[in-house]
Length: 466
Image (cartoon, rainbow, N blue to C red; front, side):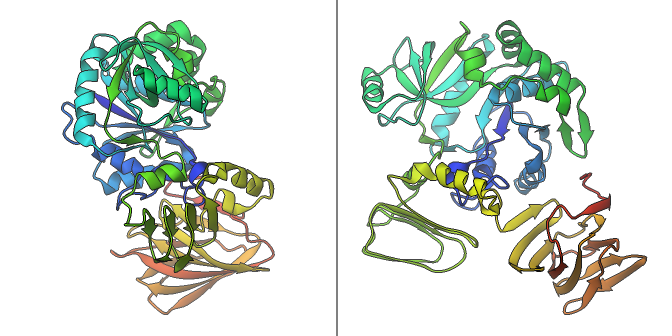
């Protein structure tokens, strides 16, 4: 059995913690591991598991690789989508890749950003699903509903409380319809998790959505290996129709079965659901970070950067990051997408980017900026290097505050220790390398007429970036 982890989401419903450049699946929302890492580690103990296949977008490739390394999952296959095409193409590409060695494994398809609190119950459901999948069924996991939730799609089963043939899939209902579904006992929340043989899903796509299958076959056939990644052919993948697996296959096939799952599942799709899935204090609050509360109830307060003090409020969401403070009524928090859309129309970086930007060599933190200057704190991992590059519009001063930095500037290569500095003139090729065993930290002061990230001309890059 091969776990297939779909990790292409942007997670804007949890803005400002989750943004396009680091969406919720890569955040440590529960404890010290990310949702993506938890998705893999909760499979420990499931028998006969092979190395996972991860399907993600190009921008997140190094974040995926680093988080896999942190949990010692070093044999994963990472497939890069050049553009978003929904779940059906992502899953069929994984199925085709799984068959590339001549085998026909079972695929356990999971989203990278879900929470499952009861691991033992989840494992039991996987074992039951395996029997059905080996018999050629397309298994979907239906969550036993705990409320008449209007934010989920529903699966209608022919039989109650057992593995059952799927009678139908229904869209997100209104509250009255949702209550009727829950009261009936044979409707489940649609989790978007599946299990099937690779050959079974490919055969059904060939019958029900041959255009998707053909585009994916060509995109994978013409793919290129780039470091540890399989890079799908952009031209071919862009021709693929964008469709979910539910629409493309599950609603049309006669092989779909649903297995009930009661394991404390959540898709953490809103601030309210994040609050619901955390342990709370005696006043029903969730507080994370440097927070003081007085006469506050039923609220979620998250501080990343500074002290947040709250007095006399109920049913609110407060999220503080280094560059954004968001305050919302919990009842209105699902409308956060409207705020993000407004920021995007205003071309605000905060809509999609965090102040801290992650790179394959480490990260930078944009500390301050103004007219014709910008200050960043840069951390370079041991043995890592930035690309050999130049800038047409800015000069840079570097001050080493931790570790030893190897600096290439023009034809000169020098070593700088703590409290030493150097100057990089406009238009001069330069590179920063960490030759040591601890991270190197520098303060970078940029000055010039234009300071955008696109003013980078790369001549050599160990990470194969353009």
